[in-house]
Length: 374
Image 1 (cartoon, rainbow, N blue to C red):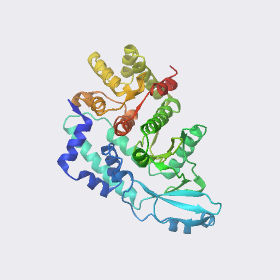
Image 2: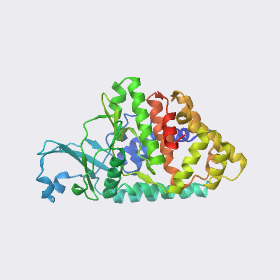
Image 3: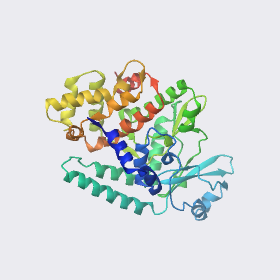
Image 4: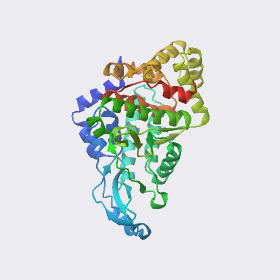
């Protein structure tokens, strides 16, 4: 029995400084590194990634309608990611905004990296492993992040959905100050999650984890969209209230109503221990065909969803995390996960690992009850 995470860690050990190489390469490989380093919030990939000459000054030179409202430009990025740098500007009104500027020549770099992933995927298929359209789906999601006008729409949509929630905040986007390579947003002077973890009491950390989980599950079970970019670098915390501010909305996945209904049935079957509903749901989704496979998948999901269905305080531990990511690889590859749901691996290998590192202990069952009307 192997855990997918154990495979990844073994790869890191045998390849030596592969994570350093990924950091220095940027683009797609920085995103891979964010998954690999889910237990290391201080990793370079969450705070400082390479990019081209992101020149805000050049952009403003061609937009005098915008530059006329700006008094000062901070030339030092307030943040860096796999796709862009983020710069802060100060307005005549006294408020601040941030500009997210795409790295130079990023599209060409990502195209080359995606071609490399396709070659590796072809090699895996030739070895007899069924991986479906995982590589195409991931490539589509990644390239979608390059379209900042689309990201602005995602951000405005989520801002509207959460505008009345005191525990979750989505910064305003300013599409009139944006382009397909530049995204302007409201500046939020909150504390990065990594710093918050280092200097906060465990009760406050548990509350923040509850707020993050609320954001993730309510989005896809009540609002038909999934925020896939779950990692330390995309959450800011308001000290005193533990409000979570979410940033970076390039990787938002939208679902058709039928898929959301199937997903709700899947979650309901696990929460209510309804094997018949589970069997009909996964069969209708085309995930498995045999009774033996259905039972194995059911037990797998029961472990996966333990934090969200336990009607008591659930403690994230290394032992549980290892159990939740452990299965026979060939068995796992026979479960034909619909390509639309591949992004949910970000819960397994993103949020769950993050919460384990944070030593989170909380009762999350009310989130699932609210989402499923149980």
